[in-house]
Image 1: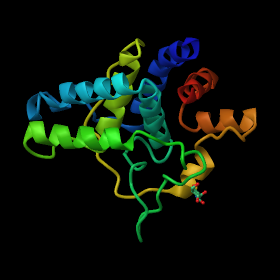
Image 2: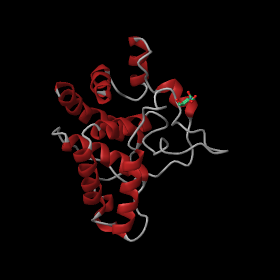
Image 3: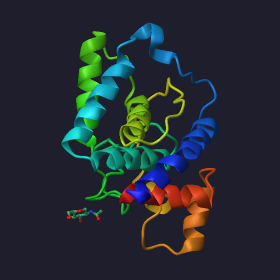
Amino acid sequence: MASSYSFVFLHVLVIFCLAHTAFSDLSDDFYDDICPQALPTIRRVVEDAISQERRMGTSLLRLHFHDCFVNGCDASIPLDQTATIDSEKTALANNNSARGFEVIDRIKSEVDKVCGRPVISCADILAVAACDSVVALHGPTWEVELGRRDSTTASRTIADNDIPTPFRDLSTLVDNFKKQGLDEEDLVALSGAHT
Ligand SMILES: *[C@@H]1O[C@H](CO)[C@@H](O)[C@H](O)[C@H]1NC(C)=O
């Protein structure tokens, strides 16, 4: 448990950095008028998933940050391989370890149902689910900026190059994080999301 407390604390800084480097016209009240039930529905599904399997909280956090490392937080990570999509799911850092996609799918379908139409992006779901997960695991909360658009492309090449793996040496890891506007503290914090 000690490691999960340290990562949740430091992750606040991480989200702040990611949100502010990649996006400028997002807002935390994006869904307030469009569908006030959207965010409570995400929280309910996340809490339910974590009550069934506690580890899912860290998996959802990891999914979000692995998504953000490839061209920003744009929900490229859930895209499956097609003729035109170079799926990130099989990248070294994700293959057989990225998990929680079924929770994201369930959130998407329940939010669409409660809203009566597909208003929410998967990128926003990933971002909110990561925050809700940390809160559900008794970490702090933070403001999640919303209104992201979903990517229609993915890049396994960038995922392979930029998402850190345990096989890299420290200076490479530090460089990988620096490219995302993240520092050594963030590195330590997010490494905790694997435990
Ligand atoms: C991903 O994992 C599967 C199953 O273990 C394996 O067959 C496949 O070769 C892996 N893909 C890559 C790109 O490493």
